[in-house]
Length: 209
Image (cartoon, rainbow, N blue to C red; front, side, top):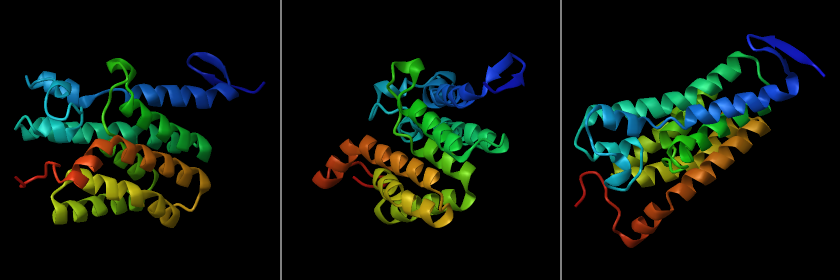
């Protein structure tokens, strides 16, 4: 069995992808919304508003800085493991698996009883790590839909739905496209309550009564 040298000794090559995925999942499980809310003396985001740990719910505290830092932190943790995997010369399917692992870490964090966020910022970080154009396309879509509708949830849903198409355009590789399909489906599923509220006309929008 092939092995490679590391600070821990010899590790079988077949275990390398598993270690990458486990480490990525643990990184994804770091919930910046909870950490920053505690640092800024704010209520636990799981106990207010939508109960989500993401930046949008943190922003409902009225404090912009922790919300912005939560957004950046969640995006960074999505970007970092994927970027490291790319720099380490991992196979394409391993990089895609790393992206899914960190994403699922955010959605189902082991540190918080598997109750995480919706994954929008983390998904953006993953896309930016793989392709700047892919990430920018999704971000621009979000900005346009939000500017028109003033619904953050609708903007996220539309950007998620179009992200596999953007991956096909900018990254015509099966592994990355499959990764984006899974991420898009999970993003839409995590917004199911928002979809119901949008259809019922009861969704909260910025600047809307």
